[in-house]
Length: 96
Image 1: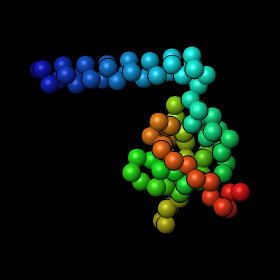
Image 2: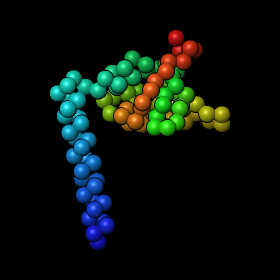
Image 3: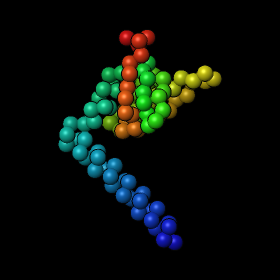
Image 4: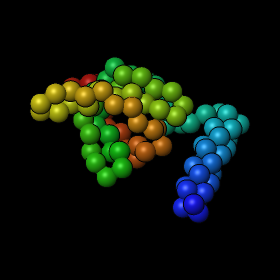
C-alpha cells in the first residue's frame, strides 16, 4: 500500500512542478526555446532530444510541447515531445 502512496505523491509533485514552471514562464515572458521553435515551423531540422539525434520537420509548437515529423528509412512518424527535452537544434542545409 505504501508503494502506491509513494507513486501517487510522486505524481502530485510532478504536476505541481509543471504548474510552477508554467507560472514562471508566464512571469518571465515565456519559454525561449518554444519561441525559437515557432519560427522553425515547416522547416527540416536535426534535434538532440535526450541522448538521441533526430532528423525531423517541426509541425507545430506551443509553450510546453512540440509536434514533429520524424524521418526514418521505413516510414515517417509524427511524434509529440516536451520542449524541455530538447537540448540542441540544428537547421538542415536543405531548410535554408
